[in-house]
Structures are given as structure tokens and as C-alpha cells.
Image (cartoon, rainbow, N blue to C red):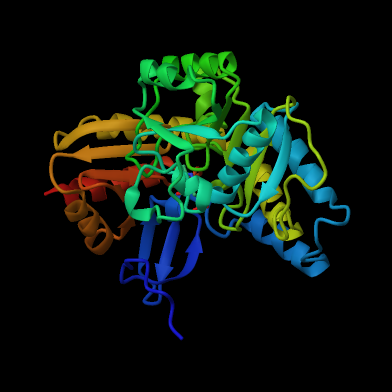
Length: 374
Ligand SMILES: Cc1ncc(COP(=O)(O)O)c(C=O)c1O
């Protein structure tokens, strides 16, 4: 048997990783400015993370959600405090798509309605409901197509209003900042108006913070820059620093009923230990502040580069739209300069480095980036 060939692969295999660097079998060192799709938040193989997950593995690696698991309680408490959502509750699952799937389901249970409003260029994952709310027909199978999803353009409040007037929507789902779509920001004012319209039409506001959350923009969640509180918030990626875990933060308006949501692996002990270690490092290393200041430094440096058509993003979620093809610069960055970056479409480079990057690593990136433009 061989792996099902669905991923276009770079000819690089990391065999070791530490902090903001990965190494191949020839000991070549790569600066990681992509974090494996925004997953590496506290840095690769952080000693506290390795210790906590190892200790858990040596204690009890797994038991189901039919017994007490105080690690879930500790994680909910810590995440509530660090994110500012102390009155919300937490449902744990294994991935981003699953978090969105559960958010849509809960919104539908709660309101008794079945339509969902999503936005042009959105990406919410590949499971049934999440992919139906994703604006990419290539990854939506005939089975996933549903009349229950409508799309409107981002930042167009009149289009949202026109849809919600039917009062048929259980939810509006929006990314804190669109990631796969090319680091496209919803305006703060648009988010505030959206919040008000959802309340007015009894639709739950789901903010997908799977890529934009967990400190990436310098606040715990990107939507907090707009000062709004969603009904449901979804997280994954940076939450486990590579250990698969997703979460759904649920406002106190929702009533839990035994059996309404469930999962075998979600919230397992290893995942909770990993997620607790991540939040402990957030606190001890002040990573929110670091993401904000390193983001400002990086943006400031990038603004001086003439070949950049547009710079988008906040903190350490940065989209660099080039006048030339992004693939040419990315290839040079990877093969000649040994720097990992991401892409979106044909002209945008996406930067999603670990939140612990230093001044020196920003400088290192800038030297490599300038060399890769010519
Ligand atoms: C905004 C957003 N939502 C959902 C997902 C899906 O997450 P997962 O791949 O963990 O299912 C992603 C993944 O890139 C994402 O960026």
C-alpha cells in the first residue's frame, strides 16, 4: 500500500525541529515562517511541552469521555481566563473542521433553523457542513452541496442584511481573518454590524478562529480587535502546537443536553496535556505581546519593499501580495534561502511563523526575502 496521493509535496523531509527551525537529514537548517499551516504556536519541541506530553504518556495516555477527566476542566478554566471568555463553556474535538461542524450543529439545535450564511473566499474545513460553507467548488463533492448554505461577499453588510431578513438562518460563519482565501480582513465595523444583525435575526454568530486565533494577531482571538463577542468560537491549529486538538467556545446562552455532541478522541488526556502546556508557555513567555511586537516589526520592514503590491493582516498573520508570481519567490525562499513560507492563490505569500520568533529571526527572514525577490 502507498499513501493516497492528494498532497503536492515539497522535496524536503524534516527529521528534527527546534524553536523556529526545522532540519533535514543533511542537517540543513530551515527558518520556519509557516509553522506547518499556522500550527506551531510556541515553537517546535518546546521543552515544557515535550515534558508535559511525555509525563502524560507515562501516566495515562487515553480513556474515553465516559469517565472524569480533570485535565479538560483545567484546560477550560485556563483557556477561559487567558482568552477573556470565562463565562463560556468548552467542547473539545480533534480538528478545525470538526470544531466548525459542531458549531453549525449546535447553532441549528439551539435555534431550530437550518440555513447558514458564509462568505466569499471562506475556508472552514473539509467535512460535510464545513466544506459546504467553504467557497471552493473543487473540494465540495455532490454529496456535500446543500441548499442550506448561502454565500455573500465579505464586508458587504447590505448583502448580509438582505439574506438574514428571511429569519431562516441558524448561523453566520466567518473567519476572524480569512486565511486560505489570502489573509483578507473583515473590517472591524463590518464585524460589529454583523454581530448586531445576528442578534436582531436570532442567528448565531460563529467566528472561525482556527487560523487567526490563539494569539496569532497579538490578541487571543482576531475578532477581539473589533470588540465583539460571538455566540460560538472555533479553534484548532495553534491550540496543540502539533498535537491534534480542536475546540468550540460556547456562550452561556446555550444549554447542554447529554448526548447532543460527542466524540471518542476529542479532549483526550494527551491532547489536553499538550494544550495546557501551550497555554502555560503563552503565559511564561508573554507570546501575545511578542506576536504583536514582532508583527509590527515585520510589517514595518515589509512596507519598504517596492515589489509588494499589498500587505494584509495583523500580528503574525501576514499576506504579502506580490506584483510577480508568488511561487517563484517561494521556491527561491525554500531552496536557496532555506525558509518555509505559505501561499494563497497565484500572487500572495502567507507568513504564519511561530509566535515566539525573535528580532533576529525577523532580520534573517528579511534578508532572505529581499534576495528572493530578484
Ligand atoms: C479558517 C480555517 N478553518 C478551518 C480549517 C480546517 O482545519 P482542519 O484542517 O484542522 O480540519 C482551517 C484549516 O486550514 C482553517 O484555516
